[in-house]
Image (cartoon, rainbow, N blue to C red; front, side, top):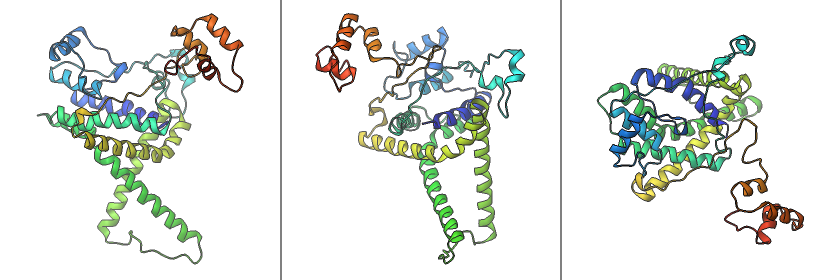
Length: 326
């Protein structure tokens, strides 16, 4: 699901830097976060020896607010590493070398619909439902504004999806009436008073503004091609967010308390400098690294491989490994 690059490009390129500048509060970014000794000590004291909230599904988001409440400084680090001599050569349309060469944590996010829905539903439960219960509104209007931006997804994910369906329906009706000679002309919702037309044009302008911003920030990190494709991925992203919102709401209602929802961790693959990823390594190499089998057992399995089966299934049939190990 390449919708992740769209959302995070805009989030890390615009939203988080503005949040840091205005509110001085930065949501922790999981494995991409560094803590001072003083911060860790304060978290341990706050949790009676446990730094993280074990009941939170988004403990990194939770920690950002806990440290802010303790008056600690939080910053969002953007540090590029660019060869000054090559910086001008690498610059492309709407893409700056300093933007696309930031030091960051790189990982492969879920690339299927079901895994993306599962992960985002966990985020929604942790940020919206658990966050609303754990972190109350503050005395700071600025921080409350960003809290509202975090929590409005419970409403906006549903509204955006329904608005997308209405827009697609109107476009199909427009195409039908324009291309079919004897088409039935439906009653138009656009033929109304002046204030309605003004409201519709204003809404259209805001939508175009949001799309242009998305294209600019995605292009800055990943190039113009991905920036333009992000427009098409808006529809796919709306569907994922809608289903994730529905799944999160269903889980919260089933358990009665958002803090009772079980942890549903999504597995990530991480790229390496050699280009050798976990998903591309041979099964035998993975089993050897985890000391599940010996090299002699691997050689035996390769020589006596059961015809018609992959290596894993063949080793399972031979009793060299268990189903759990596979």
